Length: 577
Ligand code: ADP
Image (cartoon, rainbow, N blue to C red; front, side, top):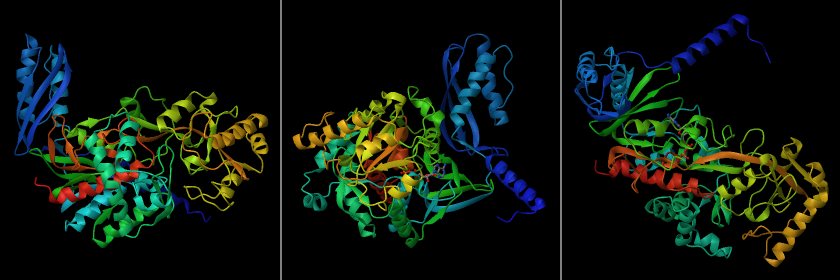
């Protein structure tokens, strides 16, 4: 590689540092406030203290303090502080001496009330019909629908590339499909998809949303196919899908979805801006009217959306603090399969303007993480029916066709929380066969990530398991296929593990999906903490909650993004505001 002259390297480092600093700087300038009535809370001296703040014409007009602690000296703070704040048009005023705790509580509650209503100066304002936040499947699909209805749409994406988690997913898309399933003699129905989704999530989901998902999935599949997306002729069972109704795209991973949707967006002249991080949803007089985004150079731009905003920012699997906040029981420091941008921004922004959250504690782990990175790559199984899991003693410990949460909990009980997926040439017929992550069997074995051998005993030796123990496990599995009586109760049984070469891939628990998020209704409208619709705000995809309950079926996430992305895109244009 040619080296840069020292002076040029130094200038580059300086420019990069300046860019990074400006991008992460807090907003500057005097803030104004968005008109509306706001409620805020904070812990006071004698319990919770709440405030009602009214903003009119961009100014704080009134602050009413509801305190259970208004005797004596606190009275002074309750009276004087709001006056001082209104005069200064700021929360940053001097506390009342002798009533510091009450003063702090009032300031905290007013800050809480104004956290979504404080608008710092922007360098420019852009007007459009619809703003979509996030360029994963849900956002791209919403943009296709809204632009097809004639709306001028801008998608704002914080990363330097589009696709989010959608593009790096395995690509499995669940939908009842009488054509394909009929040919494979698989019996299925919308009702069965509903039951498995609802019960597979411990009935914690909103049944209306589940109905919308399972009813919309077959049509969403046809919609994608109508735009040119190609899927395999056969359906399969992706891990945790519970039933063979998963459709595998021909293009690797989730690239087929993103390619298809982006092409449709481009055709409809949707503008997609990358390196554009939205950090505020603007809600004025109760209605969402736009967003504020920060570009790569740190400039703050306001996007006004005449028709409304679609929130499609994905989940928070890559945000360790947020994971622990909502589910303190979760093993800390687990890896994740997610892209680094899955940090829950959309959930926080929506909460700041009053959105209700649902199911935030439901965080999905998968038993299939790469031991080094937590990512899914390197995993060699495909059909649930055609692989087994063994622990370091070469023993099976759970049905491989179980729910994802059940399988991961069982893995957590095993020595070193570690297992091998064992499959054979039924999954990987040639060394050039690719896994769902577009990697060949040959390259995976060469890289040392996976192992292969012509006999089970030789494979066992390579992975440090007692050969006799692993052979006995595989023999019992194969016998169980004949007798339809599997030793760990697996019901979806396929090929025997008897076709060399045999493969092994080491796997650990990893964080995969956050089932919780903003509450929506079946029109993809966001619901506030009082149960009312937030006018002008729609949400779709992993940023939403209430669709999968406590455990999401494998293959249901991509269906969710397309079904609800479409609904959000249609309704942001046509729903009466
Ligand atoms: P879904 O499957 O729900 O569509 P994805 O993870 O595929 O979710 O896509 C969400 C997209 O939203 C990602 O590309 C992510 O980078 C983007 N995103 C997340 N937060 C922001 C933000 N604050 N501003 C703009 N884009 C964001």
